[in-house]
Length: 355
Figure (cartoon, rainbow, N blue to C red):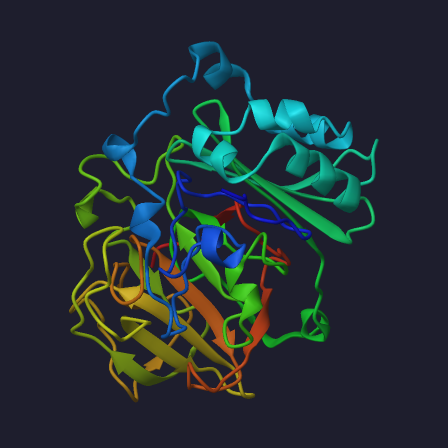
């Protein structure tokens, strides 16, 4: 059987563990991460096929213990810089090797990466056994991501940069993150390697955030929402304003199974901050929202609890600022944060102080 042809991109994610997020089509079909899409309604989740959380993780046959302990992002980036396609291929998972050949890898590197140029690391997200790196070329015109698990490379993708003019336009208001304590950015940034939302204007600058402790997002049964550290944590107002939309009553999904509602945002809140800026906070726990439409809230006021409702794979907060209260009609705005930060995937971010 002829293996998939290569253009600029190469990806195999049949055994990749997907990070927290809004459920949607996977990268193996769309040449993107085993990704989720929280607000785009036509997406259908199949993330459960790509992630088997915690106790359900299955070790790939033939992986030696030594390899599991020694494969690093520096190894991968070094092989790419040296155009060592055969070495990369040797470290692919068996599933990945079924999809491509060593010759494919050599050809891809010759076409897409300057030999001798070391990739510049811009992101690393290590959670639930998967270590995901994102690098850029020195001139920022090419991005590269690799997903490592159990001593093997389970996904590799090279893609040219595709900046948008809106990247330079920030919100007029200054915001804080809508949670308390320390969380981790699962998706965020201004390219599709860092943020799968970036492809969609309505969500381009959205963030998905979850909690990681000691390299794990959960403890216990991976099919129980209560096992996830983010579940039932407070969601707070990122800025003061008027609540203009509240949707509640949708059930929380079983993690990494088909969403239980067609309402993509699930239980969610929209706040009007003035000047044409609206924050959207999605995937609340069922019946946990404590504000109602017409309420005025201050920055840091509790809105509800983090859940797993709507088009969501596991407990997390979807946060974005738009130029319209309509999730379908509005355009996402790049958020200006009070502390001057510009978080990207893998960053640990500090929320607001408890009131």
